[in-house]
Amino acid sequence: MTAIRLENVSVRYRIPRERIKTLKEYAIRHFTKRVVYDDFEALREVNLEIEPGETVGIVGRNGAGKSTLLRLIARILRPTEGRVVVVGKTAPLLELGLGLHGELTGRENVLLQGALLGFTRAEMKRRLDRIVAFAELEEFIDAPMRTYSTGMAARLAFSVATDVDPDILLVDEALAVGDERFQLKCHDRMEAFRRAGKTVLLVSHALAQVRQNCRRAVWIHGGRVARDGDVHEVTEAYHLWSVETALAAAAATGGGA
Amino acid sequence: MSSTAALPTRTDLPVYDSARRGWRVAEEARALWSYRALVYELVIRDIKVRYKRSVLGIFWTMLAPLLNMIALTLVFSALLRQQIENYPVYFLTGSLFWAFFAQTTSSAALQTQDSNETAKRIYVPRSVFVASAVGVGLVNLGLSLVPLLVLVVATGFPIYATWLFLPVSILIATAFAAGVSLLLFTFASRFSDVREMYLVLVQTWFFLTPIVYHPSIVPPRYRFALWANPMYYLVQTFRKPIYDGVLPSPGLLAASTAFAVVVLATGWNYFCRRVDSFAYRT
Image (tube, each protein chain N blue to C red):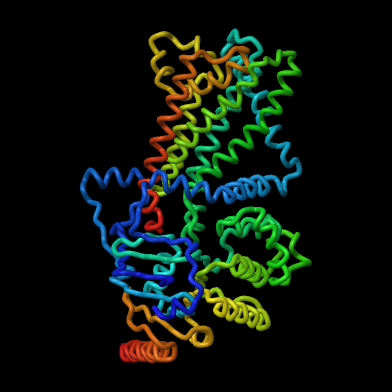
């Protein structure tokens, strides 16, 4: 059974041409019939199949639709058109600071993060020691989070997300946490994930990281799948394209000056 | 298909299919139930964060309404010269109840921002945020019953056996507050000025509801304003067992329950129909 399947998926955001934020304004505009919308297609007719156990890198420049893709799979967003099927429990590798509260202790934050991931308090208490040990925060776990460094907070978030044992792990550029030694530990854990037959989706700008972790890569451009295949081919193509566009842009501005 | 055969096939995995849509009202209810642990954590977080760095801590919740009551009692008993027996108890009962309602609903309207930040990055049923606002309100209401009890004892007012009816009146009030919260949350996620408008509205509403005054002082030709006000029935349902020592009459109980059920059903239905679109707003 496929782990993730996208069939002709489009996501269209409807953006008012002038941002109408207030009810008063809306009421006025509504009566004068001046509410004009633009459609922004974040994804267009995307087809994608990912088998269980695959580690797939998603590359593409900012605004290409990578995060929208991840949100669809995480069921945060429902597609405007098409169909998304996901088999297994997904867990995002939480972005820095999400749901972490400075006034709460590390321990309290772990329980809260676990609840955000859909776990009960009892389940999280069982996992707590292991999470704290992996994050190497034993001494600080009862200190308020506001005393943590960014790296420490990120380590804790990573430990929670990977300890909850999802079938599909969604990673959105969050691997660059902590020092080199911790990075290595993260890599090991991803490796263990893969060996256990779990699916990993890695969205990243760091092509080296994608090559290191994935065998397959998908390049998203302008809301479409530009390329899908062997990680080296795809990242190479994307890299070439990036360099060319950058050079062209430099030439254009250079010519203008 | 050969690759699937190699792996141990697990049939117990949860399947999410965006094309398969159940009855949304039931779907959201199921989702909320499965995330009840998160509601609990959010309530705990809110309360801990609020009191962690304050000297008086949790006692502040109990002290604040008491101080408020003393001030207002002085003002209103002088100003209105009403013949309300044991006015402090009368007023505090009403004002605690009102505080629960006003706090819960306006915090639900405020939750929109916070919840967007979270729900943009991880799947969480959004009703969790409304439920946690209601939960925090309930905890605060429970805490504020302590100063009320203190006041009742201190003024030599009898503690009636009808206090035991409170869970029922609180349940009805909770349903109503939850319904209003759901409506507000949905509006506020669309328009940013809803919260400010609501704060003004709730102020006016407070004076239209017999909290500081007795309903009997309302002239007969303005009585319709009381009868049309759901909070009138709800506050009476809450106050009678404490202040009058009687159970609310069947008519009163029916009216407050009807308002609560209708508003909750409308709010829940409206919320569930709009819930998918929340993620499309950034």
